[in-house]
Amino acid sequence: MKKLVMVLLLAACFCGLAGCGKDSISEAKIDYGNSEIYSKEDMDAAINLIKDEFSTWNGCELHSISYSSDDECNSENIEWMNDLADGAANNFTQCIMFESDFHSPKNGGGAWEADQEYTNWQWWLARSEDGGWELLTWGY
Image (cartoon, rainbow, N blue to C red; front, side, top):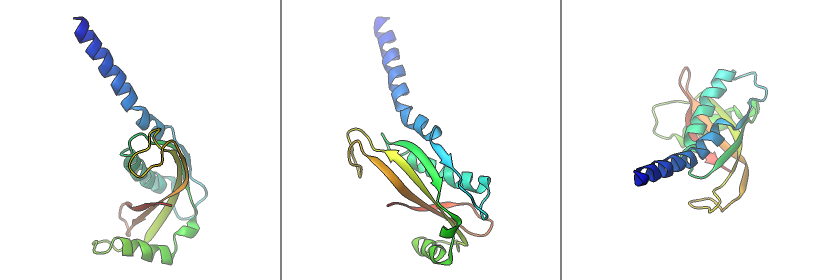
């Protein structure tokens, strides 16, 4: 019986620790900025894709996501988004960029330097007329 209780306690502790990254995602500060192009709902749809991707980054803690500006939705960046999606069936007509701040895992790993604050990390998404957002690239 003692072994069963110990195993259950260890499992509960592990589950609690595994959820830390998800908590940081849900608690991240969101700055919608000012947009004459995109509604809050448009931005939330894009932010959800960013959060989905970020949730796969084991050990990283998300602090904030901020809308850049309407200036980023220009013909040059839309062309770039279409180039990134070369061969895709979509013809993107809009793009949006967010920046995020996050902290890397204490022990590093993968592409991350250990225990570092990353700021102004860019997230680029695009969509076609009446289509959903697609996350196309992220990084500095």
